[in-house]
Image (cartoon, rainbow, N blue to C red; front, side, top):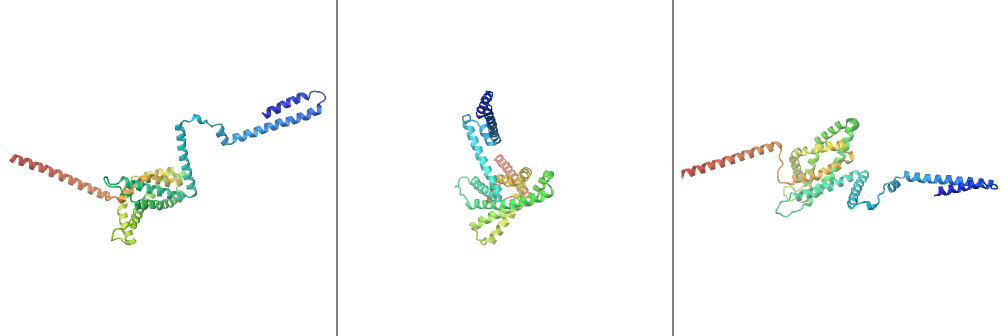
Length: 320
């Protein structure tokens, strides 16, 4: 609008300048009007440049859709999406500021929830459900300890193998070696520590056995149980975790790998808790073969006894 007014004024002054008697005045007025036209053009151009260079202005003016075009489902989905985005942004920011604290908090929450769910799902039918708080808290405490261990261990693996097998040129080989080293050395220590820590804390919190009164005796007993359950558990562990960590080490950045492990631990930690507190004994492959052979012999003996009883019964019937 200012440009149009300035141009009209310039046109009028140009006409007036042709009238005799006004040469000096018309020249000055014409010069001033030209300056005003230029200033108005520069102002509009600078304003438009500012608006187009501002992404917020572009988003609000060019891509804004009136609210009446949104349905209720669109609003609900966008609201849910914004919640997940905010949660992820908050987690990422907390991970950048306090990485170890954030990972430990997430692991403690996951272990506590998973153990509580395992207690409920494996309850005895027909009896009243009794919640074991010390069991859930001991698992949660181990989640904190294990997160610190995994944080240090995986950072060490990344530095040690990254110097010899750079990811840029040897990504697949780097991943295979890391998975092998982690599963051969890191995983057994992790499983052993789980059984040792959780059983020690629970027995120290309510020790009802007279032969384990001192912490040294409790530690020895929990060590024996952890050693007994280690290798049968590892045989089950190796059915799942090498695949999980192959994907985790190859695709996921270092600072998010503990999160991926914790998501899988939602189910695995509950399974470990079930094994740890289940009365059934874990069997090694050799013991499984022996138990299977015994079961086959028992069934064969039972079937032969049943057939001999039938023969005897039929012979007795014929005699009569």
